[in-house]
Length: 317
Image (cartoon, rainbow, N blue to C red):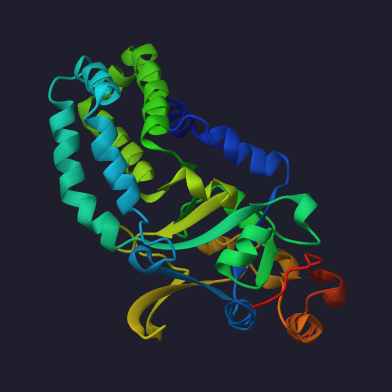
């Protein structure tokens, strides 16, 4: 995973820890897991596509709203004041410009962001999965390799980012690190010009808004895949209106394919899939055989070895 100099510097200042988290995924060959229902998992495989749903209908009802509320609270407090003073010392009027930009985009972030959620997968969970995730999200886990998420490209216009699990106090501490970096790199930021600094602050606030969750969810270890069609269209996305759980809604379907020219690297099912973990359910053997069968149809090698029945002794409800 390579970063150009300006992207690297931006993240070092405004997203402390992000570069390290991203490099760890690549360097340690970490995998991800998509916890879902068996029905959805089967559709992902058979249709070879991943659905992105509007953030307002996701399981956590506070998606994005939590981050926006946290921004208001922290930036109106003492650490927010320190941040504003550091920025204003570089270019007077920058905070007003950043506030105006935030106001013009806030509703769009909330209403026109489409996301899919995966979790970092630990090798110790290879034969069982994560109990809390079985209880919250379904009975099937699709474990995938990291290749699509570590490819350095923006052709597909779909982005991934680790979720920050922060309370108000913790975001204040995180913002303090950012302010410290701004003070250290004052000359560098001044050399970029005020408009670039405004854009950098806007991008920082965007990350806080769309990828911050209550620390009570931290065991999810979530990485968020997001798509913003109001900003940029993707060649790999197909828009469709569907009815899910009785709610008519627009979804965007990401084609799972190996199409480097479109920004899709190793995203086809045979290349992407590491294993399927069948979680606790009433008929684990039946589920096992069904998933083996569909993997055979897709040309996945060693299909039987890639489907694992979780050994957690949890009685399905």
